[in-house]
Image 1 (cartoon, rainbow, N blue to C red):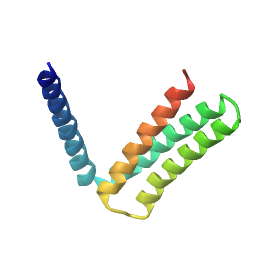
Image 2: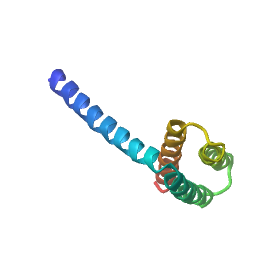
Image 3: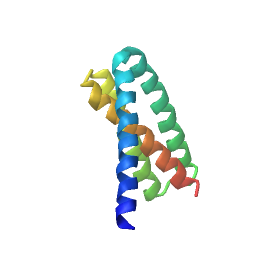
Image 4: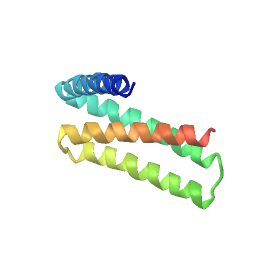
Length: 109
């Protein structure tokens, strides 16, 4: 039973890594356009996450969440503007979008 579950995990990991590598190759090939769209998309998600946090009030917990969202989105935008390595930019944009979606879901439960 455990072997079957482990095998499914390995297959899922392979599928995710293949998707990641293919997406990064496309991002890297058309870097200027991809970076522009990345700034737009992740800033929109960050704004939506900030709005959903502030819709729940302005207590200390919400301010900590808001600080985390702003910090993560700023890292992604700064990495693009500072022309860091493409892999770092790609990873920071992915982390920014995932964390924004996490905070949106967290504040709408």
